[in-house]
Image (cartoon, rainbow, N blue to C red; front, side, top):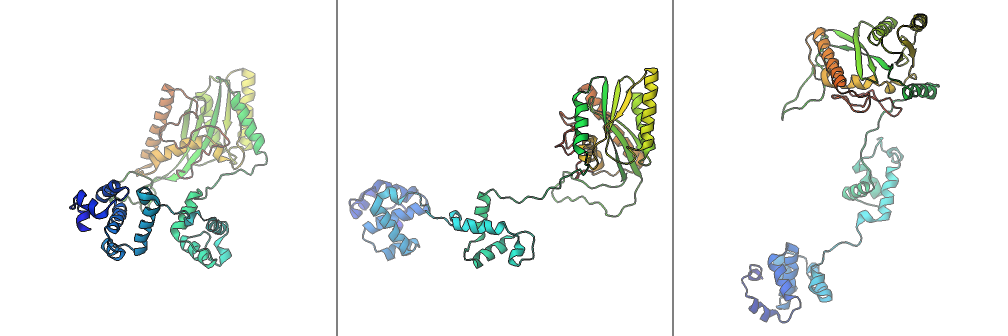
Length: 389
């Protein structure tokens, strides 16, 4: 048998020894060129035809005698085609419907129903409970069942919601304005960014093997910044300035700045969240006084407000721009002074505005730079990225 495996026995001599065996040519080919299981099967058949006992053959090949007898039965029933046919189990455990039902019955229940002090299942507990319930299955079988059904580990997603009772009406009002917005009108999404401390900031960055960037937990702040900004949706232009606090005076300052910059427009729409200083009576009186003056002089744009529903910051389009700015120049930063941080922010918005002046595009069609969310007004849009704000 050793010489036969090493192809040291001539074909004629072997043929005289085994006699007339069906598929002799195929058996020899598998014996010398086939994979291990095929070589074993071919040698069991040939050695048996030579008169060797099953004990000798199986000891030489280090296989069980039941396996040797099974090879011979396969050859006797179907010849060499049956002997070398791929062997598959007709009944695999992870295809057993009873096992599947037992696994999913457990997954659909909390572990606390079985006295386990956990909120989610782990593999060891699944294996143990299945065994105790009379449907034993190993971890590999459970994984195969769960994966085949499309189950995956996923983290729960926090969904921003609004509790404004007039949510639908306010949303419909804003969408109506945007759908009828003319070229001589301007719609602004307004908000504040900050306050944030100027110090070494953490964030994602490409790191070399073995390199680990660290940021001290306790740092002395080098200053504090609040930025007030307005995004004009038609031209995708940002107007911004820095504030010491968030109040009505800063909103009136933004109003004056927009009236000066967009003095050639017919009407300006101001949209923001429901912060108290955004919808104060003082600010509304200032808007009313301005509109009355425009009506009397027929000079300059009128102003209208389109407040967002309360608790609906995710509809504020400028939040998308803030998230992109934070990722680009705030995260992983280590500005020495407040002025250095302001210079970086000014440059970011200057380059962004210049880009959209050269390539006009309304906010929402294509993101600029590294903004994470398309700045488009949509009920399904979540402009405020919790990772980068």
